[in-house]
Amino acid sequence: MPRIELSSGPIDYQDTGGEGPVLVLAHGLPMNETQWRKVLPLLGGYRCVLPTLPLGGHRQPMNPDADLSQRGVALLLGEFIEGLGLDRVTLVLNDWGGGQFLVSEGQDRRIARLVLVACEAFDNFPPGPAKAMAQVCRIPGGVWLLTRLMRVPAFRHSRSGYGGMSLSGVPDEIMDDWFAPATRSRAIRRDFAKFATGAPGRRTLLAWSDRLRDFDRPVLVVWATEDRLMPSEHGPRLAELYPQGQLVEIADSSTLIPEDQPERLARVLTDFLTQTGAEPVPRVSCARDGRRM
Image 1 (cartoon, rainbow, N blue to C red):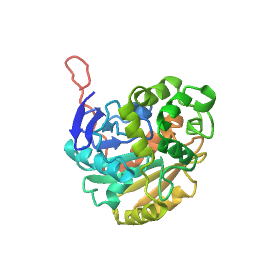
Image 2 (image 1 turned 45 degrees about the horizontal axis):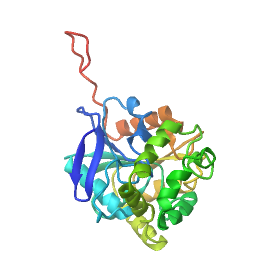
Image 3 (image 1 turned 180 degrees about the horizontal axis):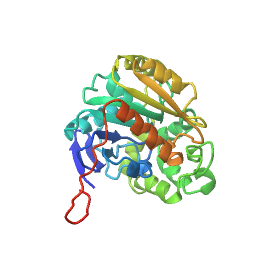
Image 4 (image 1 turned 90 degrees about the vertical axis):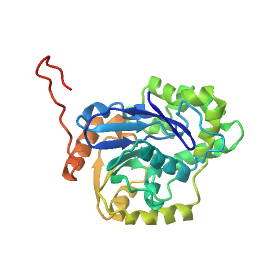
Protein backbone atom coordinates (compact mmCIF):
# COMPACT_ATOMS: atom_id res chain seq x y z
CA MET A 1 0.00 0.00 0.00
CA PRO A 2 1.41 3.45 -0.89
CA ARG A 3 2.34 5.81 1.93
CA ILE A 4 2.91 9.56 2.16
CA GLU A 5 4.79 11.28 4.96
CA LEU A 6 2.93 14.32 6.26
CA SER A 7 3.67 16.83 9.01
CA SER A 8 1.95 14.67 11.64
CA GLY A 9 3.27 11.31 10.44
CA PRO A 10 2.73 8.65 7.75
CA ILE A 11 -0.58 8.12 5.97
CA ASP A 12 -1.24 4.90 4.07
CA TYR A 13 -3.68 5.07 1.20
CA GLN A 14 -5.28 3.09 -1.60
CA ASP A 15 -5.34 4.62 -5.08
CA THR A 16 -7.21 2.99 -7.97
CA GLY A 17 -5.45 5.32 -10.44
CA GLY A 18 -6.78 6.23 -13.86
CA GLU A 19 -7.66 9.47 -15.62
CA GLY A 20 -11.16 9.87 -14.21
CA PRO A 21 -12.35 12.55 -11.78
CA VAL A 22 -10.83 12.14 -8.32
CA LEU A 23 -12.90 10.91 -5.39
CA VAL A 24 -11.34 10.96 -1.91
CA LEU A 25 -13.30 8.63 0.36
CA ALA A 26 -12.80 8.97 4.11
CA HIS A 27 -13.80 6.56 6.87
CA GLY A 28 -14.93 6.45 10.48
CA LEU A 29 -13.55 5.50 13.90
CA PRO A 30 -11.57 3.22 14.08
CA MET A 31 -12.09 2.04 10.50
CA ASN A 32 -9.96 2.03 7.38
CA GLU A 33 -10.30 1.84 3.60
CA THR A 34 -12.22 -1.45 3.77
CA GLN A 35 -15.27 0.56 4.85
CA TRP A 36 -15.68 1.23 1.07
CA ARG A 37 -14.83 -2.27 -0.20
CA LYS A 38 -18.38 -2.93 -1.52
CA VAL A 39 -18.74 0.45 -3.24
CA LEU A 40 -15.32 0.73 -4.86
CA PRO A 41 -15.93 -1.83 -7.64
CA LEU A 42 -19.08 0.10 -8.62
CA LEU A 43 -17.21 3.35 -9.29
CA GLY A 44 -15.54 2.49 -12.58
CA GLY A 45 -14.26 5.49 -14.52
CA TYR A 46 -13.24 7.37 -11.37
CA ARG A 47 -9.91 7.62 -9.62
CA CYS A 48 -10.69 6.67 -6.03
CA VAL A 49 -8.19 7.59 -3.33
CA LEU A 50 -8.77 6.20 0.16
CA PRO A 51 -6.51 7.49 2.95
CA THR A 52 -6.30 5.55 6.19
CA LEU A 53 -6.63 8.46 8.58
CA PRO A 54 -5.34 8.31 12.18
CA LEU A 55 -8.71 7.49 13.73
CA GLY A 56 -7.50 4.36 15.51
CA GLY A 57 -7.57 1.88 12.63
CA HIS A 58 -4.34 3.21 11.09
CA ARG A 59 -1.45 0.77 10.86
CA GLN A 60 1.44 3.17 11.54
CA PRO A 61 1.43 5.47 14.59
CA MET A 62 1.57 9.21 14.16
CA ASN A 63 4.18 11.51 15.65
CA PRO A 64 3.77 11.83 19.44
CA ASP A 65 3.02 15.55 19.15
CA ALA A 66 0.49 15.17 16.29
CA ASP A 67 -2.71 17.18 16.59
CA LEU A 68 -5.41 14.52 16.20
CA SER A 69 -8.34 16.64 17.29
CA GLN A 70 -11.29 16.98 14.91
CA ARG A 71 -9.75 20.14 13.48
CA GLY A 72 -6.28 18.59 13.37
CA VAL A 73 -7.39 15.53 11.40
CA ALA A 74 -9.41 17.70 9.01
CA LEU A 75 -6.32 19.79 8.28
CA LEU A 76 -4.29 16.59 7.89
CA LEU A 77 -6.79 15.39 5.30
CA GLY A 78 -6.32 18.67 3.43
CA GLU A 79 -2.55 18.24 3.63
CA PHE A 80 -2.93 14.72 2.25
CA ILE A 81 -4.95 15.97 -0.74
CA GLU A 82 -2.41 18.70 -1.41
CA GLY A 83 0.55 16.37 -0.89
CA LEU A 84 -0.70 14.03 -3.62
CA GLY A 85 -1.35 16.99 -5.92
CA LEU A 86 -5.05 16.16 -6.19
CA ASP A 87 -7.36 18.84 -7.53
CA ARG A 88 -11.07 19.28 -8.21
CA VAL A 89 -11.64 16.55 -5.64
CA THR A 90 -15.00 15.12 -4.67
CA LEU A 91 -14.66 14.55 -0.92
CA VAL A 92 -16.88 11.72 0.32
CA LEU A 93 -17.45 11.32 4.07
CA ASN A 94 -19.25 8.56 5.95
CA ASP A 95 -19.57 8.30 9.74
CA TRP A 96 -16.76 10.78 10.46
CA GLY A 97 -17.97 14.23 9.43
CA GLY A 98 -14.94 16.30 10.39
CA GLY A 99 -13.75 16.63 6.81
CA GLN A 100 -16.31 19.41 6.51
CA PHE A 101 -14.06 21.55 8.69
CA LEU A 102 -11.77 22.05 5.69
CA VAL A 103 -14.50 24.50 4.64
CA SER A 104 -14.73 26.28 7.99
CA GLU A 105 -10.92 26.51 8.10
CA GLY A 106 -10.76 28.00 4.58
CA GLN A 107 -8.75 25.02 3.29
CA ASP A 108 -11.25 23.80 0.68
CA ARG A 109 -9.69 25.24 -2.49
CA ARG A 110 -9.02 21.76 -3.92
CA ILE A 111 -12.55 20.50 -3.14
CA ALA A 112 -14.95 20.70 -6.09
CA ARG A 113 -17.90 19.03 -4.37
CA LEU A 114 -18.87 17.29 -1.14
CA VAL A 115 -20.78 14.05 -0.54
CA LEU A 116 -21.91 13.67 3.07
CA VAL A 117 -23.07 10.12 3.74
CA ALA A 118 -24.74 9.66 7.14
CA CYS A 119 -21.98 11.50 8.97
CA GLU A 120 -21.43 13.63 12.06
CA ALA A 121 -22.68 17.19 11.73
CA PHE A 122 -23.45 20.29 13.78
CA ASP A 123 -22.93 19.42 17.47
CA ASN A 124 -23.12 15.63 17.00
CA PHE A 125 -19.36 15.05 17.56
CA PRO A 126 -19.14 12.31 18.68
CA PRO A 127 -22.59 10.83 17.97
CA GLY A 128 -24.85 10.13 20.94
CA PRO A 129 -24.03 6.45 21.60
CA ALA A 130 -20.31 7.12 21.07
CA LYS A 131 -20.15 9.75 23.79
CA ALA A 132 -19.82 7.05 26.44
CA MET A 133 -16.93 5.52 24.48
CA ALA A 134 -15.21 8.92 24.38
CA GLN A 135 -15.45 9.10 28.17
CA VAL A 136 -13.88 5.64 28.45
CA CYS A 137 -11.03 6.80 26.20
CA ARG A 138 -10.26 9.63 28.63
CA ILE A 139 -9.36 7.11 31.31
CA PRO A 140 -5.79 5.73 31.33
CA GLY A 141 -6.00 2.28 29.76
CA GLY A 142 -9.49 2.99 28.45
CA VAL A 143 -8.69 2.25 24.80
CA TRP A 144 -6.95 -0.98 25.82
CA LEU A 145 -10.12 -1.99 27.71
CA LEU A 146 -12.26 -1.11 24.69
CA THR A 147 -10.19 -3.32 22.37
CA ARG A 148 -10.64 -6.23 24.81
CA LEU A 149 -14.39 -5.67 25.07
CA MET A 150 -14.66 -5.69 21.28
CA ARG A 151 -13.61 -9.34 21.37
CA VAL A 152 -16.83 -10.18 23.25
CA PRO A 153 -19.59 -10.91 20.69
CA ALA A 154 -22.39 -9.48 22.84
CA PHE A 155 -20.50 -6.19 23.18
CA ARG A 156 -19.28 -6.07 19.58
CA HIS A 157 -22.72 -6.65 18.09
CA SER A 158 -24.70 -4.55 20.55
CA ARG A 159 -27.29 -2.41 18.76
CA SER A 160 -26.33 0.50 21.02
CA GLY A 161 -22.71 0.30 19.82
CA TYR A 162 -20.92 -0.81 16.67
CA GLY A 163 -23.60 -3.40 16.01
CA GLY A 164 -26.07 -0.58 15.45
CA MET A 165 -24.03 1.02 12.67
CA SER A 166 -25.09 -1.54 10.06
CA LEU A 167 -28.39 -3.36 9.63
CA SER A 168 -26.73 -6.15 7.68
CA GLY A 169 -23.86 -6.44 10.15
CA VAL A 170 -20.17 -5.80 9.60
CA PRO A 171 -18.35 -9.14 9.11
CA ASP A 172 -16.19 -10.14 12.06
CA GLU A 173 -13.03 -10.33 9.94
CA ILE A 174 -13.52 -6.72 8.81
CA MET A 175 -14.11 -5.47 12.33
CA ASP A 176 -11.11 -7.49 13.56
CA ASP A 177 -9.00 -5.64 11.00
CA TRP A 178 -10.34 -2.26 12.14
CA PHE A 179 -9.43 -2.88 15.79
CA ALA A 180 -6.20 -4.83 15.23
CA PRO A 181 -3.80 -1.84 15.16
CA ALA A 182 -5.04 -0.45 18.49
CA THR A 183 -5.06 -3.95 19.97
CA ARG A 184 -1.38 -4.49 19.30
CA SER A 185 0.14 -1.00 19.55
CA ARG A 186 0.27 1.34 22.53
CA ALA A 187 1.19 4.25 20.24
CA ILE A 188 -1.90 3.70 18.11
CA ARG A 189 -4.03 3.47 21.26
CA ARG A 190 -2.57 6.87 22.16
CA ASP A 191 -3.65 8.21 18.74
CA PHE A 192 -7.08 6.59 19.11
CA ALA A 193 -7.62 8.32 22.46
CA LYS A 194 -6.46 11.68 21.09
CA PHE A 195 -9.00 11.60 18.30
CA ALA A 196 -11.86 10.06 20.31
CA THR A 197 -11.56 12.83 22.90
CA GLY A 198 -10.64 15.61 20.46
CA ALA A 199 -14.02 17.21 19.74
CA PRO A 200 -14.47 20.81 20.90
CA GLY A 201 -17.51 22.03 22.83
CA ARG A 202 -20.98 22.53 21.41
CA ARG A 203 -20.64 26.28 20.93
CA THR A 204 -17.45 25.88 18.89
CA LEU A 205 -18.92 23.08 16.77
CA LEU A 206 -21.98 25.14 15.91
CA ALA A 207 -19.80 28.16 15.05
CA TRP A 208 -17.73 26.00 12.72
CA SER A 209 -20.89 24.58 11.19
CA ASP A 210 -22.26 28.05 10.50
CA ARG A 211 -19.24 28.75 8.28
CA LEU A 212 -20.18 25.82 6.03
CA ARG A 213 -22.76 27.98 4.30
CA ASP A 214 -19.81 29.69 2.56
CA PHE A 215 -19.18 26.55 0.47
CA ASP A 216 -20.65 27.49 -2.91
CA ARG A 217 -20.06 24.21 -4.76
CA PRO A 218 -22.36 21.17 -5.16
CA VAL A 219 -23.10 19.11 -2.06
CA LEU A 220 -24.93 15.78 -1.93
CA VAL A 221 -26.31 14.73 1.45
CA VAL A 222 -27.17 11.01 1.68
CA TRP A 223 -29.00 10.04 4.86
CA ALA A 224 -30.09 6.65 6.19
CA THR A 225 -33.68 6.26 7.31
CA GLU A 226 -32.83 3.82 10.14
CA ASP A 227 -29.71 5.44 11.52
CA ARG A 228 -29.09 5.11 15.26
CA LEU A 229 -26.17 7.57 15.42
CA MET A 230 -26.95 10.47 13.09
CA PRO A 231 -30.19 12.36 13.87
CA SER A 232 -32.78 12.14 11.09
CA GLU A 233 -33.22 15.91 11.06
CA HIS A 234 -29.54 16.51 10.34
CA GLY A 235 -29.85 15.32 6.74
CA PRO A 236 -32.39 17.98 5.64
CA ARG A 237 -30.67 20.55 7.83
CA LEU A 238 -27.31 19.97 6.14
CA ALA A 239 -28.85 20.09 2.67
CA GLU A 240 -30.45 23.42 3.53
CA LEU A 241 -27.27 24.83 5.10
CA TYR A 242 -25.14 24.38 1.98
CA PRO A 243 -26.21 26.78 -0.83
CA GLN A 244 -26.06 24.00 -3.45
CA GLY A 245 -27.09 21.15 -1.17
CA GLN A 246 -29.43 18.34 -2.17
CA LEU A 247 -30.76 15.48 -0.08
CA VAL A 248 -31.29 11.80 -0.88
CA GLU A 249 -32.60 9.41 1.76
CA ILE A 250 -31.79 5.70 1.58
CA ALA A 251 -34.06 3.16 3.24
CA ASP A 252 -33.08 -0.09 4.93
CA SER A 253 -29.76 1.25 6.15
CA SER A 254 -28.07 2.53 9.26
CA THR A 255 -24.96 4.72 9.44
CA LEU A 256 -22.74 2.50 7.28
CA ILE A 257 -24.65 2.91 4.03
CA PRO A 258 -21.60 1.55 2.12
CA GLU A 259 -22.16 -1.67 4.05
CA ASP A 260 -25.95 -1.87 3.94
CA GLN A 261 -26.81 -0.37 0.54
CA PRO A 262 -23.64 -0.17 -1.59
CA GLU A 263 -25.39 -0.47 -4.98
CA ARG A 264 -27.93 2.20 -4.16
CA LEU A 265 -25.23 4.49 -2.77
CA ALA A 266 -23.02 4.03 -5.84
CA ARG A 267 -25.95 4.81 -8.14
CA VAL A 268 -26.88 7.97 -6.23
CA LEU A 269 -23.24 9.06 -6.11
CA THR A 270 -22.56 8.54 -9.83
CA ASP A 271 -25.81 10.32 -10.76
CA PHE A 272 -24.74 13.31 -8.67
CA LEU A 273 -21.23 13.32 -10.13
CA THR A 274 -22.51 13.17 -13.69
CA GLN A 275 -25.06 15.94 -13.08
CA THR A 276 -22.38 18.22 -11.62
CA GLY A 277 -19.79 17.81 -14.36
CA ALA A 278 -17.70 14.88 -13.12
CA GLU A 279 -18.50 12.19 -15.67
CA PRO A 280 -16.60 8.90 -15.48
CA VAL A 281 -13.80 8.32 -17.97
CA PRO A 282 -14.24 5.00 -19.81
CA ARG A 283 -11.27 2.71 -19.87
CA VAL A 284 -9.68 2.27 -23.28
CA SER A 285 -9.83 -1.20 -24.79
CA CYS A 286 -6.73 -2.76 -26.32
CA ALA A 287 -7.87 -4.42 -29.55
CA ARG A 288 -4.67 -6.45 -29.91
CA ASP A 289 -5.12 -8.80 -26.97
CA GLY A 290 -8.61 -7.97 -25.74
CA ARG A 291 -7.46 -6.51 -22.45
CA ARG A 292 -8.90 -3.30 -21.05
CA MET A 293 -6.41 -0.59 -20.24
